[in-house]
Length: 468
Image (cartoon, rainbow, N blue to C red; front, side, top):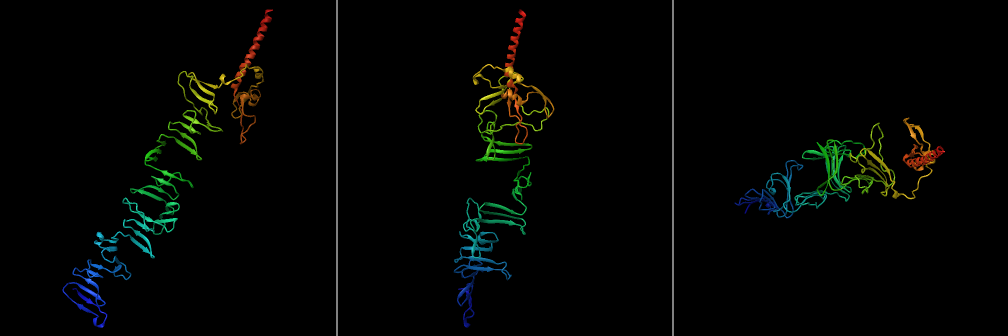
């Protein structure tokens, strides 16, 4: 039997002492109810007569013990809450290496498979599951498994999620991560950006104007309202694009060179206004205005109506070349065609073909199989007589010229003239007529034949007169 000091409820039993030699001391209240037990190991039990710890508290329900320092406001207090059996703690807050086998520290522990819950205003605000996942605003944080631990923050409405915020004491620099109906958001407040760092070094930033800088802290070629991505490397910069982790294409700049490449066996396409304008095929052919050229050539330009190709030099200097066409061999060559002129159905209208070592021939289709109703030309000499060859000076530079006036030539040879007399462009500038004097060759040849026939007839008459 232990030694007992008891407090009774009557004047005759207000304080009683009983002693024995067990070495155990008990304090009793209400006469016989044991309140505190101190065993021979100096373990103190409250609510239990068999304490196993320095302070062992037990009760029929949840039992709370508070230990605090000398401050009246409770600063320095520690709490311990145990279940009714006293053998499996639900929550422990202690500075004791014996708690849960840890090192000396202040800790909160759940020794069973139950979660650790945090409440305010009678409502759960946060929990840590037995698996170590943390939920704020949710009582079932997602577990990703595989050794990952989750911090899941949910908002109170379906359209707004939780917010993670870090800020300076005066909120002048503030960064938020949150979700809403637009998706995940990274947000800063104030005129500063978001910086991404690996291995202690900055790798990317989004500045306060929305410019993206990779490998540099300063965006290049910026302007108000202009989106900007600046990619900088110590020796070069590259953007790789891949499919299934297989490199397919790059945009690369190194030193002074720029490279745009498709590593796959496909084409490189260029679009404007959501419409393809040009492509470079896997074989290196360049097609403009078409996705499958019918020419079979290295370079093809096709257009459905309107002007197709224009070549020009807006600041021509004497001696400069506007266009060069190379081809053929350096010996006698009559097979290389430099340019072919065709109708839209593929029928050839004319060509420019190499001839000999140094010459070219300008051809217009003239095959007899393309013609019908072939007859000798007549009245050619009269047409030549109707021509009005003139000399003139060009207004722009004052150079001398000779030839014909287009609208006058059209009255005799309409097929040698293009355009209309006095035509102007939409801006009021002159839309000049043009002529092709090669059309006159056949008529001039016929006129010579007619003239020669007259000469021969006159010669015969003269010989006849001489013979008389």
